[in-house]
Amino acid sequence: MKHSEYQGFEQGPIRPPSEATSLLIRVTRNCPWNRCSFCPVYKGTGFSLRAVDHVLEDIHKISAYLAVLNGHLKTYGQINYHDLDHLSRAMSDNDQLAFYAAYAWLDGGMQSVFLQDADSLVIKPDKLIRILDQIRTSFPWVQRVTSYARSRTIDRISEDDLERLAAAGLNRIHIGLESGSDAVLKRVQKGADQAMQIRAGRKVKKAGMELSEYVMPGLGGTGLSRQHAIETAQALNMINPDFIRLRTLAIPQGTQLFTDWENGNFLKMKDTEVAAEILLFLENLQGISSTLQSDHILNLFQDVEGTLPQDQEEMKSVVRHFLDLPPEEQMVYQVGRRLGIFTSTTELNVFVKRQRAQAAIEQYKITPDNIDEVIDQMMRRFI
Ligand code: SF4
Image (tube, rainbow, N blue to C red):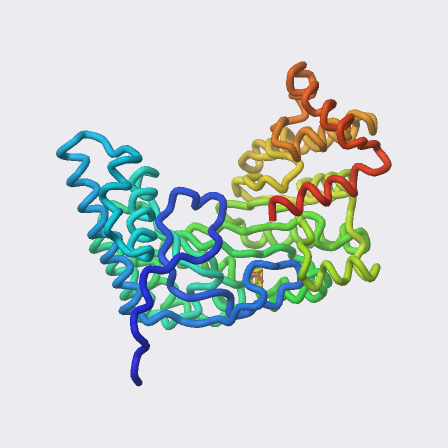
């Protein structure tokens, strides 16, 4: 088969928040599933594999630019904005993309590599191992190589192959579990049910990789909220992932879920209802030692974080504290949190922060009656 020409260095559109300092290596383009009703990221794009040689070419480029940057550092002891401009001035736009990716990685400490896009394990294990081998050869100091993967894809890979990938250096998988409720998963067309999600999660752990599971509070809407909270916790209790990461639902325009919402077929939850759902979820996590993280700007609680079981009570008390506030106080916190003013309800008492939140409330004429509408608009800015 004739391979297409190398099109240059590529970067995909997203990575998990925890991979902010990772080098992004694009192994495939877009999402092979692309049907989840809440997901806007790859809509209107087609999935394609990149030739392994092209991915290796990207790795060589990063390696070459790191050598240039390190050479400069050795000679001059620093790299400033003018140096970067000078070093990259004669490069093509595409080479500059690779050059600045190399610089960002160097600047971030070069600890980890993230394989893009949505489901890198969909390519043949032998091909992925060639890429992982090259990463190890070019960047032998790297501590972590990670990727997104769909539960359905993991479910199809043999245990042996998964172990071979782990041995080649792939040591953390991020899965968008979203929910452990079959009713919710079916409704949002996740393409996996609870049993498959449990099998996939356990398989990743058995292969010796770290596992990060994303959970989406609010995804069941008001109708399925209870099931969503309880059955998601049940699934995670069976998996015991290393990390559980919360990413609250926002409904972007252009998605099927947005249409469902507009038509009244999906009943979006208020912040206070999502908070109650998170509390129920936390109450149902049992017998696991996962670390829960809330590292997304869409989340109402940045401080619902900790390791189970020892921090479970503390995490629940953060949510309870919000739920026990009078509506006016909840509103001040909601607005302040979404504007990046508060990181915790305890900051409601910090005079300067509170003043800023209240100024926004007055400026935009926010009341307990229209707060959810305003929050929807704010959240859409972060999608
Ligand atoms: S699998 Fe992930 S990237 Fe693909 S449509 Fe679903 S949420 Fe989006």
